[in-house]
Image (cartoon, rainbow, N blue to C red; front, side, top):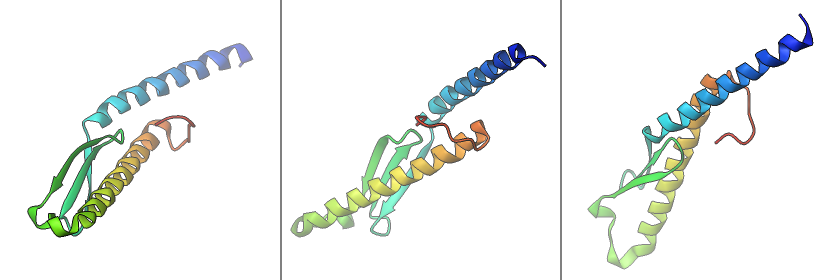
Length: 106
C-alpha cells in the first residue's frame, strides 16, 4: 500500500467521525439529565450539551427567612445537573470515537 492510499482513507475516516460528532451534538440537545439537591427539593434539568433547560423548586424549599439556603440548593442542583450532562457527553462521545480523546470536542 502506498502512502497516497493512506491519506485519503484517513481523511475520509476523519470526515466520518466529524459528521457523527455533529449529529451527536444535535441529538444531545434533546437529551435531558437532572441533578437534585436537598433530597429533591430543587432539581436542575440540563441537556446533553450542558445547557440548563429547567429548574423545579418544591414549595417546602422556600423559606423567606432563609433565602441563602435556597440559593445554595439551586447552585448545588445546577452543578449536579451539569456533571450529569458531562457524563452523558463522555459516554456518547466514546461510542462515536471508539474511546479516542479528541481535544476541543464539547
